Length: 372
Image (tube, rainbow, N blue to C red):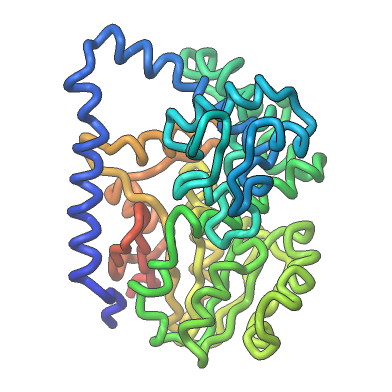
């Protein structure tokens, strides 16, 4: 069963990403090293001004208009000169345009900060720059590099998901951020993978089901079951009501569950489990436990498991992959893994890698089946 689609387009995308990586490294080659290190060392200045702009919701305030600083400041209840200096720095970074003196407008780069866009990443910016996510980087990273441990746990006294269980506001922000991952990875998971071989997608850790819906829109014969924590899916059906066609939503259902306890049982070889960015948050032992549960759920049906994950290079990882791995180090006991590291976990779980499906994205889909 061949599940790769659009192989030519995927190869071209891969070539473009390699070229983009080369371009990204140009400042390291042409900037004097002391000055370049200072730029990198103060890069948090950029993330903080972006965070404040997202907090103030300036992109939505601007909309499709051109507004003077005084108007923006009035609408966000802020000090005009400070707003000007904030937006001036962001415009120098390429976020927002200063179209005339002290007058600003959205541009291509600021537009995804708007909540009314399908590619909005505002929740992701807010989540990654929140106190919950910032404090571990600033307060506990060095200690954990020296001694081991998880910076998030040391900073907050609880592991990430346990913390979210007791902090509803951050839990909701985290869920909204995860729902916006598609804006980063695109919909190539629906286009470059042949879901037509299957009849039901069992979306484990699928939040409110945005990925499942993207797949269902392209395959009218498919149904999807989304499984996630009870507090995540509690309002999922109401979330989509009025936003999507009733006929489409009729093919989507939700179930509370825990991957580390049990998962819904496959009924035939036409079922496929989808886990998008789930296992990279687990250490190896927990990954094996989860994979064993999936293997048991597959039974002898011939069902497949699709893991949508980043696959690290064996050597010379690019900045995107290395940064995601450090984010895993900061927040969880997990990590981004090489193909050899993934394969070792599959082998320990009685699973075999059937196919690696490359996408027009920074992630891949690893297709698993039970070992014969």
